[in-house]
Length: 136
Length: 381
Image 1: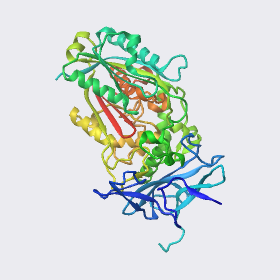
Image 2 (image 1 turned 180 degrees about the horizontal axis):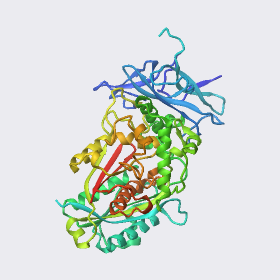
Image 3 (image 1 turned 120 degrees about the vertical axis):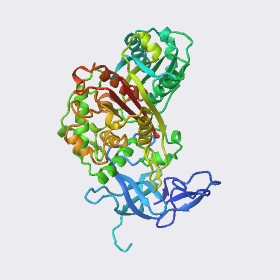
Image 4 (image 1 turned 135 degrees about the vertical axis):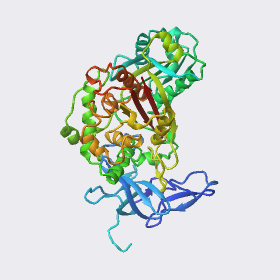
C-alpha cells in the first residue's frame, strides 16, 4: 500500500526514518521543524534516540481543523523528547502506559499512521517509543 | 511623575450572557465604573481597551459618546488586561493625563480555542497531527514540574476545590457551586494529569477600571488605592510556552518570574509582604507553578501549602479570592482586569462573604498569556 509522510521535510524517507531539523549557520542553534529560510539555516538530521522530557495523553478529539486524524478518534500519547546535543522535540508517543512512562525514559524514533487519504494512501507522522533493548 | 490610583471599578458578570454582545458587556462594566468613581464619560481623557474576539474596544465611543478622546486598543493574549492597564498607568504617570479608563471584555465560542497554525508561524502538519492544543502545553509543563518537585494530583484538586468554593461566594463568578475533591479527581480526564474540572473555560465578561492621578483622586475624594507597581514582560530565552514544536536543551527562566521580580523591585516590596494574590490559573497546575514563579513559595512547597489551606480565604496568603479563571472562566480581554477588580474589592473590605480574614494592605495580581507575556500589578492602600 502506498504511504507518504505528513509533509515534506519533516522526516527522512529512509528506514529507519529520522527527523529533519535546521541548524542556524551563525549561532549553531538547532531548531525543529526546518525553517524555510535556507539561507540562514542548514538542513541537519536529528539523533533517533533520546529521553522522555515530559508527557501526557490526548484523551479528547482535537478541533478539526486543524487536526486531521483517523476516525473514530483514538486517544494518543504525546510529549517532549530530549535528543542529546540537539534539542527537545514535541512528538506523539506510541503508547501511554503510565506504569512505564517517566521522565528520563530512553525512547527512540518510529512512525505512526495518522490517517488514510481518500485513495487509501497511508499518511504517517513521527512518534517515539520506549527503547526495548538495552544494547544502546 | 505622579502616582497612579484606581478610583472606580465596574464589572459585568462573567460566564454566559446570551442576551448581550461582548461590546455590550464592556459598556455595562464601563457605566458601572463611572458610577463607582462618580465621574462622567465626558470627564475621561483617554482609554485603553482590550478584546480578543468580541469586536474593537474603541467602537464603544458610539455608545458612550463621541468625545474625541484617544482610545488605544491592545491585544496580548490572556495578558491583554495587564497590557491595557500598563498603558493607562504610564499615561497618567507621565503627567499628561489625570483621568482614564481601562476596559476589557470578551465573548468566546464554547470549547477549547481553535488556533490556526499559520497565525503562529507554524506549518499545517503540526496542527494536523494533533500537537497544537493549549491544553497539552499546560499538561506537559505540569507533568514535568510535578515529577521534579513531588506534587501530587490531590494538590491540583485542592486548587480547583478552593476556586469553586470562592466562586460560590463571588457574585460576578460563573461557576457558583462548590465541587468536592472526589468529583474533581473523578471528572473526565482531558490531558493527564488534568481533569475537566481542573481547567478553566473560555467565557464572557467585561471589566472597567478608572485610573487617576493623585491630584484627581484627591479631588474625587475616593479611597486611596494606589498602583504601587506594574510590570509587563515578554518571554526570556529558554522559556516554555504554548505551541512549541521544539525547546532548547538549555532551559531558561520564566516570563512570570521576570515580570514578578520587576514588579517587586519597582514596589520596593517582597512576596512575603503581599496579603492576597490573584494569579493566572488557566488550570489548577498553573496556579501551583505560578505560586513559585511569582516568588510566594519554593518549588515543591505547594503540596504542603494546599494541604494546610494556606491559600484559602482565611489563610496566610489567600489566592484567587473570587475563584480565579477556574470559577470565572476566561474572557481573554477581561481576565487580567478581573484580577485587579477583585483586589480593589478586597482592599476596600467590600468582599462580603468572600472577604479575606486578614487585613489587606498589599494586593498582588499576575496574568499570563500566550505566547509568553506576563503582567504583574501590585496595589496598595
